[in-house]
Image 1 (tube, rainbow, N blue to C red):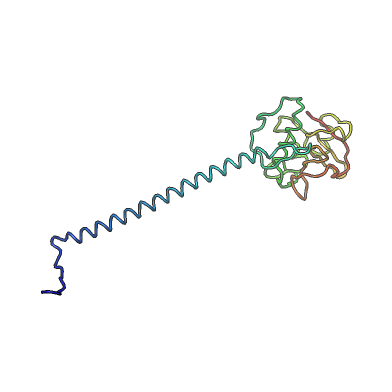
Image 2: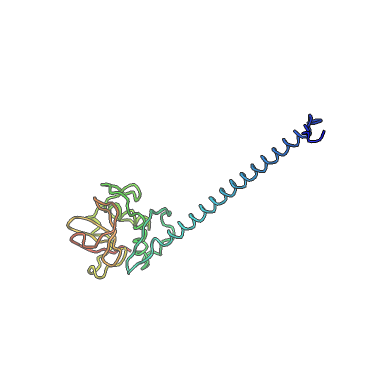
Length: 207
């Protein structure tokens, strides 16, 4: 009949339905593959970012203890093993090495009677523990430190690593050069200050 609408009958054998299901399955698999690819890409990007951050941290750490303007500067907690890579005994580099090492512990809290460079120190415990790393034994009190090593003829002849001993208050610090010291104080813990922190009684060189 002209103009009649043709109505499709049942799909013989279900071939049409099977084709539709197969097409849908292929689409699903393709979407899953795309998602997996993006997950892999994200993981790889994160690994590369973490590796780059690690390299940046190592590079920054290598600059922590550079000398600026004639005095030793630096920061960051130390983790090297005692005695590792130290200068020869009596070397002119010993004092500078000690000053650099001391600066790794900036921010360590003040603890009366303490001698842990990471958990807490007092002034003499700090000095003693820094030089203990260089296999040098120092007294345990600021008063006794006044007799350690030998006397330097005036602050103008002091070098990085020398001990600056004070009368008022009774105190001991490590000289950094250019009028600066690193020491443990009651208010700030291990910190950098001016050498005029108190009344200087003597400057001692122990290397």
